[in-house]
Length: 289
Ligand SMILES: Nc1ncnc2c1ncn2[C@@H]1O[C@H](COP(=O)(O)OP(=O)(O)OP(=O)(O)O)[C@@H](O)[C@H]1O
Ligand SMILES: O=P(O)(O)OC[C@H]1O[C@H](OP(=O)(O)OP(=O)(O)O)[C@H](O)[C@@H]1O
Ligand SMILES: [Mg+2]
Image (cartoon, rainbow, N blue to C red; front, top):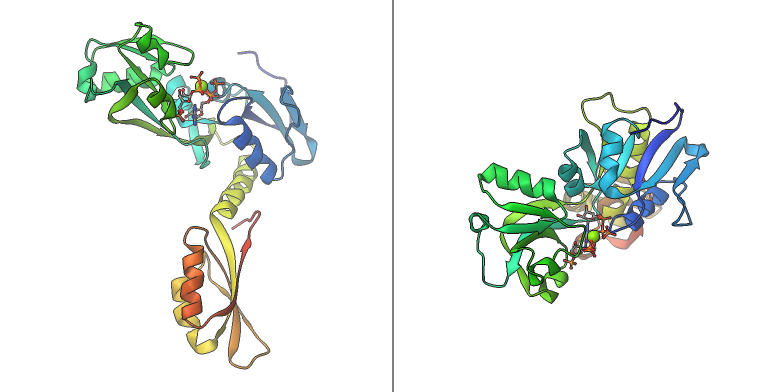
């Protein structure tokens, strides 16, 4: 791969199209980075934050990062594995979740052992061949670029191996998954394997982590009588420790605590039952813990 001239900027690869592209740019924007407004733009310098973004096919991103051409990348775990590139996950990003399965005509196959001697069509040859080799199964694997579901109807494959998200595409094609899930994937932050962490990774990662926490936590504020504080904070201890401030009303305090977004409404009910009043839930946009 051609190498770029040296630069002080941290070079970050971002999916330019496909299932990960919009969500990747969104998390970067929420992390305070400049993002492109024109989807045809291929690179973008964010001078203020010392980062240059390269919009690339997610399948190629692990290769650029593995050879050190780019410092950090966002891609799918399945694409990273498929490439066998020497890049490693440093942070799961919680979006672009999918499962990778074998699938065939409804009712025809049951387990991975049934694959012996079959023709398998997939866009993920690396993942499939590694999975078959681990199990000692001999089958022929054909690489297709996409729309792999149709290859069975067209008679070029017996089974497919592909990403399943909702399952709608398989149903449309009269197919079903069989065997165990091959791989659970989501978008991941990657860097070059076995190398010093790139300059700027710590800040970049901390910013994104701040957004991930902000997405999964909310801020809860409530007022409560002093004697009930212990019971209330036992329900919601927060990440570090709750902030407790005095109130003008004698014997009462204000409590502020970060709580998981999931179950936050139920927690409000419980706090109310414990005697808390003025319970407020607010969004966190970003944080550094
Ligand atoms: N419904 C989905 N279809 C495809 N990939 C998905 C889906 N949901 C999540 N992903 C993840 O997105 C990545 C695939 O990226 P890619 O850009 O190839 O997406 P794509 O939607 O298949 O794009 P294209 O079809 O334009 O190549 C993989 O990591 C995959 O696990
Ligand atoms: O389970 P589902 O929600 O139906 O999603 C999975 C489908 O989406 C992807 O195809 P994509 O739209 O990327 O088209 P492609 O096959 O041309 O890549 C993937 O390859 C599956 O076909
Ligand atoms: Mg696709």
